[in-house]
Amino acid sequence: NKFISNISCLQTYYTRRKSMFTFEDFKSLAGITDRDELMSAVAQVPEEDLRTALFFTLLACGKNIEINNELWRREHERAHRAEAMLKSKFPDD
Image 1 (cartoon, rainbow, N blue to C red):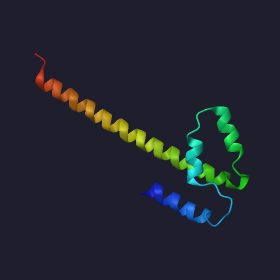
Image 2: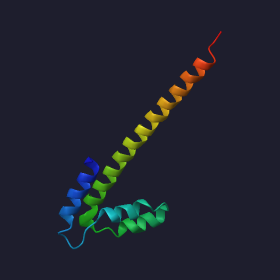
Image 3: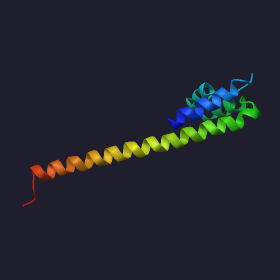
């Protein structure tokens, strides 16, 4: 999986540093829903790790879009199949 591969490479690179922003840190931040709490937590990210944090954010955003598109496609196909089944059972006269 490309997403996991990118994260693994980045984590390997940053494990050599003592202070690093990890995927676990990202997941913790992603779970915060209160805006003020999120701003306070983000302020704790070391400045040198902001690029890493942005990288994780962009990866997650891209993956979210990909998943949403796939879910929409599946739901659309399911609706078309249900419509076709109804039309076959109740043909227009």
